[in-house]
Length: 177
Image (cartoon, rainbow, N blue to C red; front, side):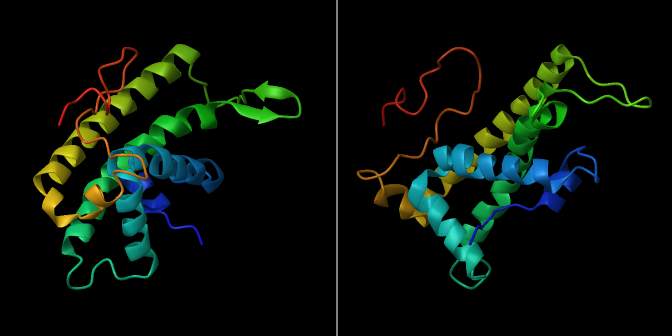
């Protein structure tokens, strides 16, 4: 059973995504934002624990307040990171004819440069929310034993670098702890 930590409705309500955008485009973007990007921030154990609590509807039970707060803090990051991914998916389609771009008499498609600029805009928003999420987790790390439980066997969470750009800024391994 697939467990998503945010919903299609939240992404549409928090961003300027059209209400008629197909879930066929949006859900894979949400899935990728969660399973690739959020996993790099939280690490395997903490993300898996969060998904477990959401999956069995125990996230809002007594004793899980820190996880419920974490879930709430993840929402805008997931929404904006999903938008970064969906911009290209909605702009271009891969079909039997190859890579296509649809056009309509009443709709003017954005140029490739405009698409890239919009992706950069939403990436900056996602990075901002990533930094706030990382700072919140660092301030509340004692509430999450999963942050230490997986250090040996799985990927470490990256709680120090939120920038996404064309140069390497040190990443998860660049910060000495």
